[in-house]
Length: 125
Image 1 (cartoon, rainbow, N blue to C red):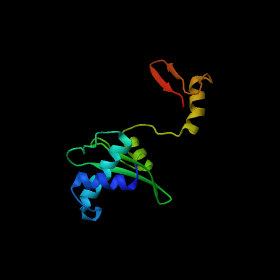
Image 2: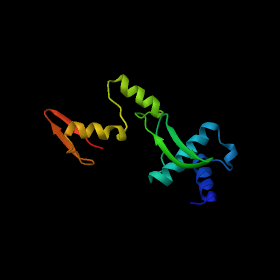
Image 3: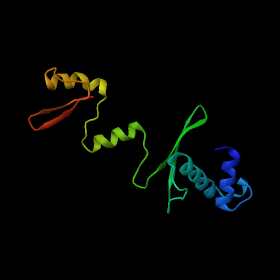
Image 4: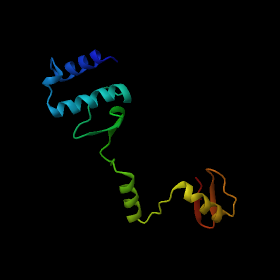
């Protein structure tokens, strides 16, 4: 889709003759509208209620966009690890888990296999 086609769709959808006529809220709705058309293959209908879009940049350019669902949250890795630990999960990097898996399985662990030991399931990485 070209920029001109994109602008025409936005003009039609929001009933404006210029992008500059959009309010700040409408600009966000327009971004989500085009995102739905291009990425999700949706009908172009905007979700009702409040919605959010996660935009990922690299070197000042947008490389990925994704609509964030009402039941989803965005957090840094550090925040996620802290939340997991507060919920009594053990968080360990796969490189640090490999020796632990080997010790727990007596060296029988293979990449990506699940092993049962007594009543515990241990997942390899």
